[in-house]
Length: 291
Length: 140
Image (cartoon, rainbow over all chains, first blue to last red; front, side):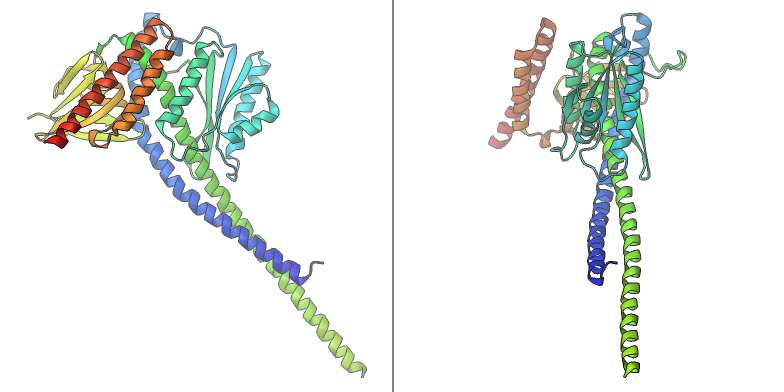
């Protein structure tokens, strides 16, 4: 049985841990708010981009000569899985759930005889995937040194991916990230970005007839690579918000668990203390009676 | 005077939103002005200076990369980079020019090379215009 001193030490250490988790929770909450604001600020751009591209693409697809980024390379043999995770742990199942989704997809694709490659954004996903598919990872982008995500970061990743596409390293690219629903719910999501998919729209619902300058094909050729960067940027922002949301609830849980632990240990401590007092009293009384 | 709703959006945020009388946009094939009632139009941007006229005052922004869309609901400009001219740092712009110069050297194929050098020329033009502006402002 633990001595009183041991118990006291244990309680003190759990209390210290609780203070840390509490502080982390509050920091995560503050950062979450900022990440959410950034994600919301980025939304109009992505939405408008999608509308315009949808309009343009609808016209082009009918015309036959569609660019590679929409039509694909004509094969789906080589698959690139772009896995965006966090740079840090202590965030519940955030990293694991994204990696699990990517891993399941990879297994399914491998089962179909496809060639699967990974492109990791974020250290944590890389660490997990490295154990299972050590020679399928072609690239790791580390965003640890980035304090606030800017479009440039996403753009750099997009240009790496596009140059891989030019080299013929893959045919289909799928992006994995966690969509931010709320603080308690982040949904791991797979989104195919190359070839791009657009929602089919009705021919009658088409907007006004636009004039284009330069020609439609040129605009599309310029916008499609940009769209990749925009999609990645959006995913990274969503991911960041999800990360802090996940971390916040994980730390909230940890704080609560530490509280439970302290209560339990204090109970044991008091009981042990009382048992010792009782024992000493009995010893004194029986000693006095013996006289 | 009739106004048109105008939005200037960068990937990071909504830079400007409001009713304006005229916007002068640096289009890939020349500058163009947009007034209320403009025909539906989609045009690419070149790096340059965007001028917004509202209530008789003009506001100027540096924009780079993206496109302008005019539809009956107004004008929307999506630019990869958009910031008020006062916030633009000449040093950062010089860095961009440096990068563009490297792009020209790295570019393979005539098409890519041509595009890269056009980008470089546009950036240099903006830089010179700004420099003239600033030195002019200090001497007067």
